[in-house]
Structure formats: structure tokens, C-alpha cells
Image 1 (cartoon, each protein chain N blue to C red):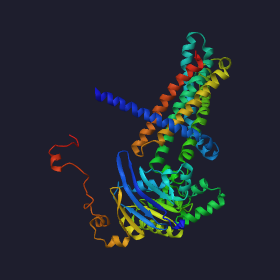
Image 2: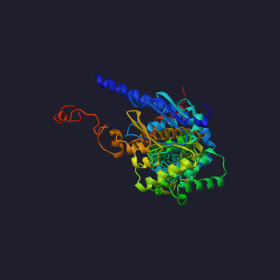
Image 3: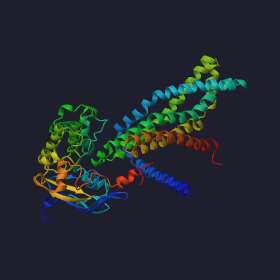
Image 4: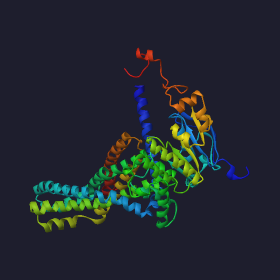
Amino acid sequence: MLDLLAGLGAFTLSVLARLGLAARFSCSVLARVFGSLRRTGLLVREIHFAGVRSLAIILVSGLFVGMVLAVQGYEVLQRFGSADALGSLVALSLVRELGPVVAALLFAGRAGSAVTAEIGLMRATEQLAAMDMMAVDPISRVVAPRFLAAVVSLPLLAVIFSSAGVIGAYLVGVELIGIDAGAFWSQMRASVDFRLDVLNGLFKALVFGVAVGLISVFEGYHAAPTAEGVSSATTRTVVISSLSVLTLDFILTVLMFRGLN
Amino acid sequence: MSDPLDAPLIELKDVRFGYGERTVLDGLDLTVPRGQILAVMGGSGNGKTSLLGLLGGRNIAWSGSVRVDGQEVGRLNGSSLYALRRRMGMLFQFGALFTDLSVFDNVAFPYREQTNLPEAVIRDLVLMKLEAVGLRGAADSAPSQLSGGMARRVALARAIALDPMLMLYDEPFTGLDPISAGIIGRLIKRLNAAFGMTSLIVTHDVNETLRIADRIVLVSNGRIVRDMTPQEVRESDDLFIRQFADGLPDGPVPFHYPAPSYARQLLGEGSAHA
């Protein structure tokens, strides 16, 4: 019994210590973000790596999610004789929820894990130490641009995901099932509000970008300098990012669509 | 102190340092005059690499004084520490080249980060440094295409890019064939003379060290136990030095890690499983 309590205490302490470390690290990254804005070459390279090279998976996934939404949505809506509302159902689901959330989950798996592995290996092979000894701050040079790339890329990827989803839904709903194209688009335009839906969705994606970006660079920077350390850091990035995205999504959704009262 | 240039470049006094509960350096004293090539030898885990960390300001001593060029390294703040490091070069054990940059860009890195030189000047400087290590022909290669010895020579070119006053070498010969190790050794000696540097080599390669060092110190149990010239090492009949120089597995430095009695443990006492 005492062992159990001691174990619980030790576990809590280690979690708290890790959280403290993460908070301090995040502050030092955020403090250097503006400096790395000036180094456009580095930033562009990282955005290319994190954003542009995630396009394929985002486009294909968005398309399929949209197509599935159309099939499932049509099944339910036509029971109530409102199959024409398919456009607004699909657009609202994508723009408000699925775009930011699924894009963030895919981004964590594709780009976040790669960033963690890259920084972790740079640490394991003493590249970060070498940089530090050359009087070049590794957080400014390596970490901050990769973090910023995630913050810039994810909202754009979420928009692209939602757009691909709408196209997928159009292909299935209109071209395959045969809903009226005019009804599909006009219902969508009538029900999607720019501020409430589109901007809120973008804001969510921005928050997820900050979260996934910080988690990826933190796990990489603090990975144990061994093969096992880097592999478990990569796993942690994907697991912690996914859980954080889903938790944050719930909190943001409640605040945005239910208000604070 | 009359002329500051007569003052030693490195001065360590009664330095204690360790990790967590474990003390690695325990009352270490060391003075290195300018221009010298000093080899620090000792078995693995004797705090040789920690010593480099202390000099570079990556480790902070628990107590005692670590001075480089008159400055107390542990007390420097971020920007003055970086100012000091710009005058130091460090060669890491496996080179630590940036794997996402070409050989040329690796050597150009310190110039691009630390100076405002135009790209044409940087190009000439990089080619000069690569020529000095004999690898101008490999400028366009990726680090992954290089052999271990070549990678270390490129890293050496990168480390001397800003003409440091002090070069720190962490196990520069480890994992190299005798020819590559010989090349690195000669480069260390030549560069030290040509650029008027001071070099501190942490190593356990006895042959290369005897060939290039001006002075050899042996570290054991966290302090310096012998301080002599290569000639003295060759001629010494001190058991400790012979064990080191001839690579004998057992001697004053025991082969066995401390353990309970072998016979008793085989009879099931003590732990180590089952």
C-alpha cells in the first residue's frame, strides 16, 4: 500500500517536473519566435517541409472524408426529406470541426513526428551541442523556425482539407447520388457564417498549430540521445499531440459555440 | 601579472564537478600555457569529457575556478559566454557535422552566422579551410558520403573557421583507422602551430598522443595523477603509466568493476537476478 502511494507520488512529481520543463522551454521558444521571423530563408524551408510536403496526405484525406460525409449525411437527411441540406451539413462539419481537427491529427503524424525525430537525432549526434559551441543558439536556429512553420502551416492545411472535403462531398452528393447542384451550393452559402464558422475554425487550427508545434520541438529537444529515446519521443509526440488536439477542440468548441455563460 | 599574453590560457583550480550524486572531478588543478598541445588521458568515465564541457561553459563546476583567457567561465552570462566561444573551436567525437548541409555549407556555417562577410569572401575562406584539411575536392559532398576520418577533417575545418585561440578535441582518434588517425594527429599539430592556437586533446589513443602532444596529463578518480612529457611517458617504469601506455587490462586500474565476491554470488548470494 505504501509502495503504491510512493509510486503514485513519484509519478506525479515526475509529471509535474516534466510540465515545468515544458513550460520553461515553451517560454524560451516563444521569446525567440520574432527573431526567427527575420530569417526568412530558414522559415521558408521549414514551411516547405512541414506544410507543402503535407499537402498530399491532407488533400487525399480531405477528399475521402468529404465523400464519406456525403454518403452518410444523405442517408440520414433523406429520411427527413431534407437531402438538399447536404451542402450545409458537410460544410459546417468540415469548417467547424473536421477540417482543423483531422488536419491537426494528420499533421502531428506526418510533420510533427518528423520534426521530433530530426531534432532528437541532431541532439543524439551532438549537432545541437556543436552549434551551441559555435556560439549559435540552437533554439533560435533549429527549434523556433520549426515551431513557427507548424503555426503557419496548420491553419492553411485545415482550409485546404475543408475545401477538398467540400469537393469530395460535391462529387458524391451531386454527381453520384444526384442532388441538385444549385441546392447543394445555395444551402451551403446560406448556412455557413464567415465569422462564426470559418474564422472560428481557422482560430482552432491556429491553436492546434501552436500545440502540435510546441509538443514536437519539445519532445525532440528533450529526447534521450539513443535510438530508443528518439523512437519513444516520436511516439510521444503523436500521442500527446493527438490527445491535446482533441481536448483543446472540446474546450474551444464549448467556448465558441456555447459561450461562457 | 605583467604581460597578459604570458598568463596561462587555461587555469583550473580545485574544480569539483559531477552528475547528480556522482562526483566525476574532485579537486582537479590544471594550468595550460598558450601555444601548448596538452593531452588529457584516462580511462572512460574519468571526467575527461566533462572537463571539455567545463571549459566550453556547457557544464558548470560545483566549486572551484575555471578560467579561460582570464575569464571565469561559469560566471559568464549568455552573451559573454557566446563571445568567449567564438574564440574557441571544438571538435566533437564523431564530427557532429550538420547532416542537412553540404560539406561546403558546414564550413561556411560559422562565417554566415557570425560575420557579415559577402558570399564571395566566404567562398574563398571556406575553400582555404578545406584545403588546409585536404578536402577541397569534397566541398559538394553530403556529410553522409564521407568516411569517419573525412567527416572529422571537415569538422576540424569548421571548428577552425574563425581562427580560434583555443581548440578542444573530444576523442579525435576514436574509431579511425591508423592512417586517418595519423592524418588527424598531424593536422592538430600543424594547425596549432600555423594559427598560434592552444590545443587540449581528450583522448585514450596512446600512440597518436605520444607523437603530437607537448605534455600529457593522466586523470584518475577525478584529479590529475601524472603530468609529464611524451618522452617521460615512453621512458617511465611507473606501473600506472605502463598500464596505460601498453594497454594492459589489469594493474593499478582494476579490470573488474567493484562487485561482491564471485564465489558467493555464484552460490546464490547477492542480487544480479534469479
